[in-house]
Image 1 (cartoon, rainbow, N blue to C red):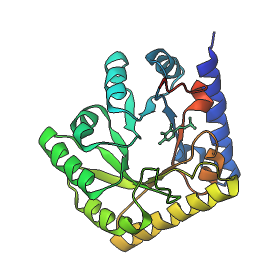
Image 2 (cartoon, rainbow, N blue to C red; image 1 turned 45 degrees about the vertical axis):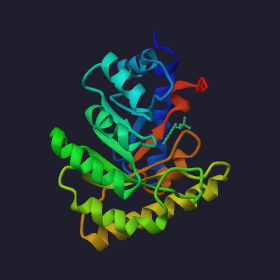
Image 3 (cartoon, rainbow, N blue to C red; image 1 turned 120 degrees about the vertical axis):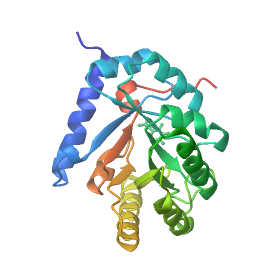
Length: 231
Ligand SMILES: *Cc1c(COP(=O)(O)O)cnc(C)c1O
């Protein structure tokens, strides 16, 4: 017997692989991060039992709770806005942090990771649409942030993350994703480092993100259903 989460996970995984093939890419080069924020541990467990091992959460407290309840071989990714006072908690629980968007946060994570003996993978989050109500560093802040990230010894900086602006059409989203990829390519060349990861694409726009080079798509509602924020 398979429940709805297992079925939807299988369908999304097949569509992600198909989008990769359509873009002339190896399906193994795109990984599916199941975004479980707001969904109960039982839903995560269902996806886990269906083979998924990487989950994304956007609140420190919720991440901690689920990590305690669920199997230890899950790789947790923190994808939400990270307040500096939650940095230690998130470093304890998450192997990846996608949402590093300021120098102060970067510096705090580097210091704490050193103290805690952690070496998380981090991504720098860019505010793709330039909207004031969104998280992510402005494009202009990226050079300084990138130079600082390169110098970190306890954080493994692997690439960039971004979200397409809400309410845009598919073409606009794809243009944003393409811009993020080019920026990543420029930074990697300019700093002479490897930046393999591009975390971009959600339930509504992952095919466009994959066409533009996404290596991680962050998918919630297409797997788990409609989200209830409860507030
Ligand atoms: C919630 C969230 C997602 C998943 O969104 P869906 O539309 O449900 O797929 C992806 N990325 C981030 C940063 C999120 O907060």
